[in-house]
Length: 500
Image 1 (tube, rainbow, N blue to C red):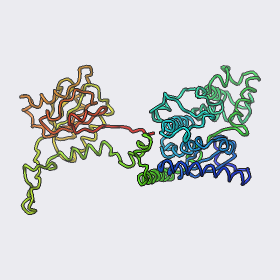
Image 2 (image 1 turned 180 degrees about the vertical axis):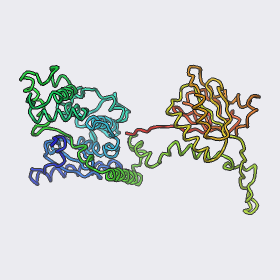
Image 3 (image 1 turned 90 degrees about the horizontal axis):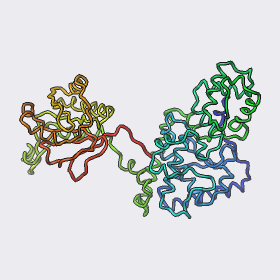
Image 4 (image 1 turned 60 degrees about the vertical axis):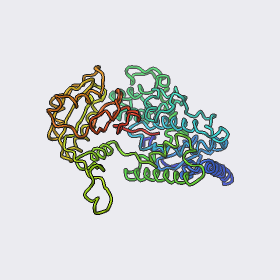
């Protein structure tokens, strides 16, 4: 059996009932005082089941994929109340911030560490006094100002190759190396360990794979390796035999229990747990809003956490469709043209504006908009215009207009881009005022006039006032939205979103 997979059952506490009663009382007191100080945070912590254990693998505290929080008995006994509140909040935030689903294909130990850094930074920046909420310094919490404001995904990418630089022990560094090994390397290393690194126990190919596995472990831990591992000195095999009990031996820390339960769940179970925590967050928000300590009194990071839940964000694709359909033929209305029902209801109702021209599609080809962003934008836009059955004026531009094409069918836009290979020139500057001048120029009058335009750019351009445009315009920016003072109707194109 792979020792890394044999950690799903925790030992029952061996302490006397009296000892456990005292420790449980401390946990309940910590939770109750959090509820009093912050209904939102306290409500989150109340939703996490707690278990006190003497299992040697739980040296401090841990939460698993099922949402159960484990406290090591000795660790719990050593915590003062402010530190205990921080640990409770820390474990709850792992669940609230989707730690397990967001891990994806990342190495679990490194992801755990990255998430620890992100959460500890949030707790450290809270407005609570140190006498109420403080990280347990005697246990060296993972906290570094260089990760301030970074989501766990970015912290993960910035972690050092050797986790020993963060103060982690050799056992964790070896586990990190094992998580990064190829399947054949893990198999060969496991066989070597089970056979206590006896030279005759593996084939030459298996020894080669074992050497590849050992090369992934920091050299300061494994030491120098010979080219042919099977021909090593007896002292080498003795050193390796002494090395791996750090991870696999009795009382070792072969896993922090983080992903044991999670990896055993079905996709349906995982989604159900994730949805359960979304509901818990909303319940906590509702409780905060009902009390006298509303969301505005929470730390800024907590407000950001609640924002998307209380005000759901509409995907840019949906915003694009809504705004374009609002401008298409027959969708816009004006009081200068009273509607037909005005007489029957006894009031002036706005009538439809009869847009007859094509939709202008103005694409920044200066090189500031990347190919992935351009592809995503054009794919969505063409689909919307195809359903509406409207023609297109495709204008490409940077510091000046490059091409102006009239296309009767929206699907021809993609073909035009592919066939003409609209050049991303770059280096020539970017100025949308060239489109305004072009639309009003004599040469542009030979094509059907544009009734409404959609402009794609990164947003780092000299913006004219929106009123300077001779048409209604929707602006889609891949990076920077125009300052509101210019009066644009603008949305941001976002191919991916991070949180926490």
